[in-house]
Image (cartoon, rainbow, N blue to C red; front, side, top):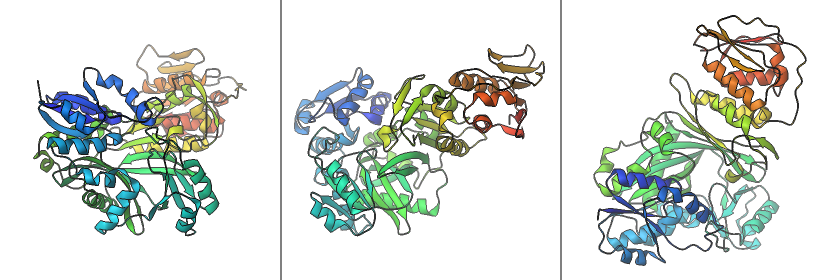
Length: 526
């Protein structure tokens, strides 16, 4: 029997710990405590979605941490670590019972409940947000000061249940939606908290702690868009070259760890910064979740967070090998797609156009490629139709691609999500195709028998997703410095006409040589 690593609530990115354990010669053990609603709650959904990662893993279902400790009696347990948010209380209790490095269970609420964590900051003399539990309309009236207020459930995530209220009437409406709603584990006793709204950029600081020694492993800038009384994620991007403001945010994050009793393990700290400086939104005493893969994080960070957390849990000296401050990292942008109105989304064009970006790494979409679905206006993370990972390619910037993709979803959504409109060509192709050029016409892509030097495009009838796929395949066949010539007739087949065609060529990073109002478009591949 080998040494065991106990993962409390092994789901979301906590499933990375399974392979991490095996890489270190440890036997992973996944622990799950009861929840009110296993079938329909968010935690139940995360558990089911993580089942494949648990193949061959010892799984313990028990009523409490004490029973887990009894079931592990006689085992050589190397460490206890929280695999997701719901596992934090169990990890705190179990590590104390087993005498392993962990965090004090008496302060668990300071790391798991939004109201308690801000009270902890006040006791430590750190800046906090004015926060109050709201049980009634009278509580709201007492809290209201005439400035924007955030109302959200005590237990939630991903901006679900988030309400930005600018009037007292909006506060009353938000309270009615939150009060008594089902929380993330299926319990029906969710209550609201109110906070002053902080205007300013938002950051995620991921940290690692061991015996009170703290390190920042990576830092992300988050951007959100106000949509009515909701808030939609727009993107998360790695901080690669921290400004003085961002350095101050990272330093404040370490102060938050100390104030909330975070002594051991990974943490995910959400912070905003305004003219008064940084202030905590919330701390999560577990690895960062989200749609990131191990491969994406390894490519950008050189680690995937949970591997560092596990090594630190079994080796008290490992933390001292990590650099202090914010480490230099490669550009990584997670673009969360936003639909600005209720509409149909055709995932065929969406998949193909994002793959045309030079920095494209991965698309995560709940719908199969080619599926056409009706989606509601994006008002929180759950309503986003997809997310796209952009990672800095050699010699280029992922920021350029992000800016273009953001512009497309605002000004040219039909290029991304398809359209019901039909396009009839009003003219025939008029360009001559050199013999060393590839040709993309209505029958597909035709490569020359000799070495390809350019691409001519004369498409007049082709499904949108097929056109994107063959267009970017044709561009890929052209060497650096080669020309791409697009006949004027092609603009009749593309949403937004010539402007839409320009945007599609910009996706591939082409440099325009001739950009006239009519006639062919001529671009050069860098």
